[in-house]
Image (tube, rainbow, N blue to C red; front, side, top):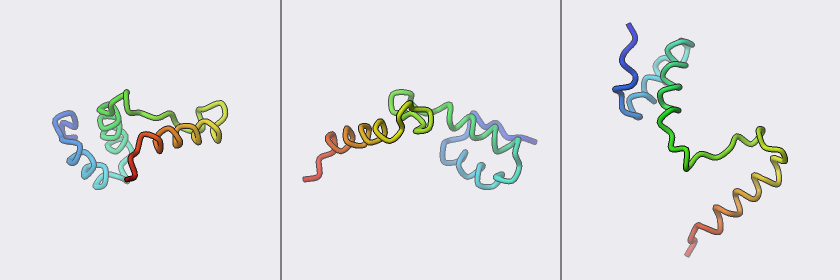
Length: 71
């Protein structure tokens, strides 16, 4: 019996993933629910999907460093 994954909190989903890591169907379903909750505005591209991963990832990191206040 699969629980209603859509009603779980993110913390509960992560626990479910941990408990079902060896059950492909259950794991995939829970991961899909968790991933669907990500905010598209904060998502970063997967590096290997970029045209020039090294320079583009470097640019993303520099941008984040400039936005971070270290003092």
